[in-house]
Image 1 (cartoon, rainbow, N blue to C red):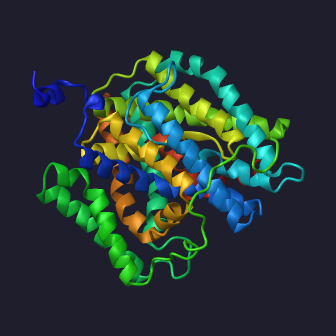
Image 2: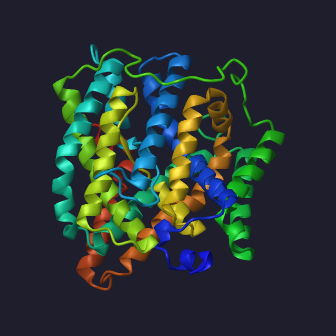
Image 3: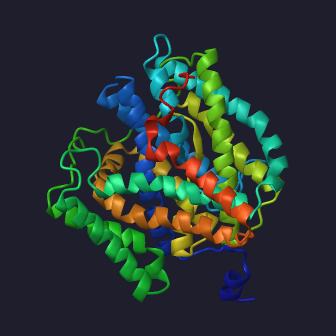
Length: 408
């Protein structure tokens, strides 16, 4: 059997691509999840009052753990790793809890890392039970969850497209750059095929970066003073501290992460034609929990599988787990190279926003596609979807909706 036939008959997740194509598609995965990966340490570090150098260390620690976890999740090691094209990164689900912890007397970063370690250990014990209830996740449920996840990501994309948290939100230069990136992606997907479609997001972001640079949006400050090489060391902020209230809060976060990850794994299985059985689901959730446990020692936070990954896999049609494994290696390299990390972080928010509108929209579209497999004509099913998505959008539309509830 020749190589072409082998590639055609191999499972989608096992297919190998030409080296250049694999590197370019892997870099797309890195760029699209990078903003989310650095956002969590940025927010928590600022809430804890850390210096710019300490926040930079948090970012590098997050990239290191995300890279290692991505390789393990994609390729599998022993009983851990789902062996599908999955990107890992710090979870947004824990941000609000960690911001509160950062301001609590006697907790701070050591308390956050201690709670993260304990939550990861809890997740390792809890994962086998979650995979036993996979039958409770039919297409009606997974489709609803993935649709809600995609919709909940849109505010992030729109915020980026408008220029991010800086001044003059919605200024024409920001909107123009975001529109240019999105237009390039759409034109490539409409009029081109094969390799070009696979790297359409990368091309759009590259052209957007050049355009943004010509408009003075690219900030490379700090790249000259950054060290050429920096190794992340464990317990950089001191020994972890274990306190009951933070631990209980983070354990709840792990449960939320498991629900999201389970739906994402099942949806990704549909896209790749790879059936996710309870055993594989357990492997994936164990990787989420193991990454969280490891992250606490390495100065970072709860980790989970990134839902944004679904949109890119669906849009590019590249479903090889080797691509995300290479992306994981790129993240590990970035964690060792502060100058390279600063270069990637210099990508303006408007560029990320233009690409994310397409990517996050594909996440929602994947959920809608899954719903087509359910009896959506049944009025009771329609009501279930309507109420679930409606409730899921509450904290997105009005984050202060729960402000009067007890702080815990």
